[in-house]
Amino acid sequence: MNPESAEHSTPRARDAEVTLRAHPGVRDVSVIVWRSDEAGERRLVAYAVPDSDYINRVFVDAEAERKRTQTWRKTFDLSQFGKQADLSDPAFNIAGWNSSYTRQQIPAEHMREWVELTVQELRAFHPKEILEAGCGTGLLLLRLARECQRYAGTDFSSIVLKKLRKQMEKLGGDWSNVALLERSAENFEDFAENSFDAFILNSVTHYFPSVAYMLGVLQGAVRVVKPGGLIFIGDVRSLVLLEPYAASIELYQAPSSMSLGELRDRVSHRIRFEEQLVISPEFFLALQDRFPKIKRVEVHPRLGRFDNEMTRFRYNAILHLDDAQNGDLELSFLDCAEKRFTLDSIAALLRNSVKGSLAIKNVINSRIENDVEALAQLGTTETSKTVGEIRKSLEARAPRGIDPQKICTLGEELGYRVDVSWVAARPDGSYDVVFRKLLDSARPVQQAIAWPHADIDASQLARFANVPGLAVLREKLIQQLLDYCRQNLSPDKVPTELILMDTLPTTPDGQVDIRKLPVPETPPG
Amino acid sequence: MDRMVEVREFFKGLLAIRHDRQPFTDSTSFFLSGRLSSVDAVELVVFLEEKYGIDFAEVGFDQSQIDSVEAIASLLSTVKAIG
Image (tube, rainbow over all chains, first blue to last red; front, side, top):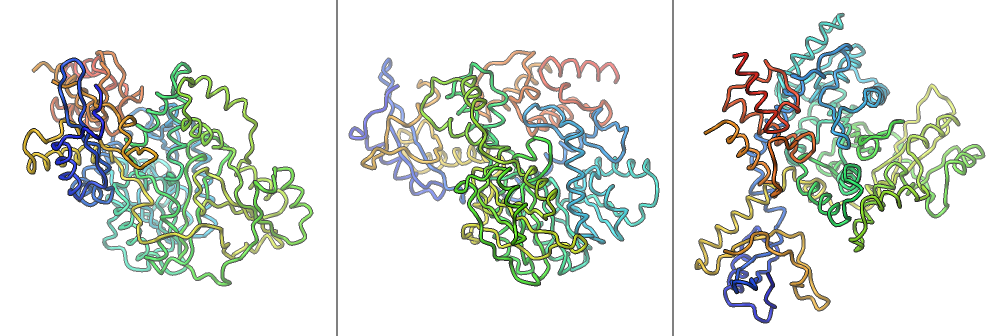
């Protein structure tokens, strides 16, 4: 198959192009005639750049969202029918927690740390009345409820809640302050305004069907949480790290002999077929514009000693509904890359500090620097390289970054409170850190930090998240566009194939570069 | 239609949505290998429940039970034997 050059573009290709350009779902389009050498047959192939807002508006309707939510609910139901859910420890049901790398259950010690660190973080706020949406098998509830006056746990899976009730029974004691309710996260019915001091949504947001749904949940949360309370959104998958995440998983799973080209295809396939909602930290910062009750926002990478997808690619966002007492703490941040800081040089600075605080930005994240580098290698043109060679080059690379957990441990050992932040949402996963000397350990440092970050356009929240199951929605758009052509063009002008593109490749003089367009998949005839 | 033919057709449909045109055999692993996703697994579970009346709450669930055409054949025969 060969494309005919643009100069030979036939009137029927031009007509198809004009028609498709008029469709609101199309941002850009080029229709090319392909000629089969053997049969001499000509086929019209349309290359269209879709309008993502249109896809969101038209295909992400209530029915599609309901179906998506039902699918996830079923996944949780099924996880409780397996052997993994038979428990020796009723407070630790981790059935269904599988690693994207190995597809096996995440090791129990990783999950224990994950649970304990989350509980510890929440406990520091001393919440007395908690509402947790998506409480699941009670990993947080069973640890926090005893310390509360009231704990309402909701979950969309009746089977999971049934299991949780059994677990509570097995553990014994008084659970009369706990209410378990079968409902989806956006249902706040019967919860009064300003009636909780914490709303928890832990490791749940990636099962939400859309960013609009997420916004609805947060709207309810802002209403029911008292001024002075907090909204804790834990274990959120980061959109700015979706590409390094996909590269990391695919590189792990690929055989050494695989070519770089095939690996690249797998990575882009994984991103295109992402089924879960993946959100940028910028989304949470932008919320302040929409909900004035939110006074400040913290975003930090998930900490922990273990290396797994949670400690690499996920974060916690904490929305504070309190009034910042003293205004934000303005600090002068030193650039880590510029100063070439290492863990040792930071330790020396902290030991000799007279100021009592140290702020550093752009700390390369050692946990994912190889994933970011792997992604960069995929962008090169050396397609003859193999996965084995990429792995070797990554292993040989001298690490440049610092582990966020190690930086925290160091500061704490030297008597500092340490805050790390992903507010800046950089695509390499680098983070910022502030050390503050704890002069009186009984009095925690309260003042909020003014973290460095770029300006955020809060008017386009949808841009801060992906569209789960987008690939299926794109298929629907293709069908709609072809139907549109059939309705508006004579049969000979309707493209035989329509391929969606992120952008149309162009030549230096701005024309569509036909040679770089993908060859149609199905042979003519 | 023969049950296994129906199951093969169902897998074909799931693969088509992912533009996966690679061939498969009755022993090809779909879920444990990552060729299909957990969302696809749910679609298959609903199909098996509705079409053949399998109650996973009763028989228990593990992805290996539905991972290939062969595994499903074995699952269906066990369920039939129980029934």
